Image (cartoon, rainbow, N blue to C red; front, top):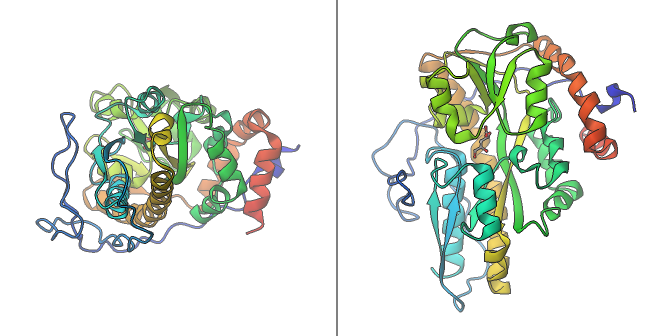
Length: 376
Ligand code: TK8
């Protein structure tokens, strides 16, 4: 199959930045030191008004209430901070369970990679020592190799293209591929479009990337993308990134604006470039042991709560991305957009990554995703 048939449509134009609005604070509290991050009970008055985006409120919680059944506290570990859309969506998950089980199922949330990085938390699910987590697809490719699909650069021109694929038969079949691994993959969510940051220079062309020492996720295609562009990539767990940047072990990293902002990478990075080079999904997943121990009614509630979490996460992830980029600029980070031509140059320069990896991932799968995107 010729490589040109494997590429996405023309890339989107530059993003218009939405103005940042006042935050309706959700409070945070707690957090480090291995204790669950507490937050005000649902519906409590917000804490001191912190400046931030006014994120959409969680949707009303629907569905039958099941009062009868066991009570338990679900231990839910995530990599990102309490200010991230990921965390706020897990708060919604907690509230849905509380309401629909009449308080029987509680959730302790452990943010900031405090109970491990993505790979460690997934193996904790397999052993049953952690109940739920919410990793990126890239570190999960060792369990389900087809997920490498989402490491292909410039695959999805718009997030809605990703939604269509993830919520259709391809996404459903990929979640089922976790069956037998000790992990129950419940639903997709959004990490988002990855942007490049570094401390050396503004990046607008592939040439600018040459020689940059970059942290990348633990995944061979992520390494290949940046090697192909002439950078010097190092695979590293997310929890180590801030200190690696601070100590100058690497010059830069790449993540969505929401993560760059909520993890305060702008404190140790001077330049941010809107490269939008990869769209990374999150996966909301449970320990198979934990899930199998639930009654059928509670399993259905956990499944429906995960899908509600997916929907809410996508909404606030997209709202937060615009706000985060604006705030990073306002805070002094040198943030540059790329013109459509500059983005096309990066897409062209990473074509060899497609040519090499699409056949390994499955040319038919990649082509099917492509045709769903092209169908609009
Ligand atoms: C957080 C990670 C992170 C990912 C990375 O658990 O490792 O850079 O983008 O969001 O999954």
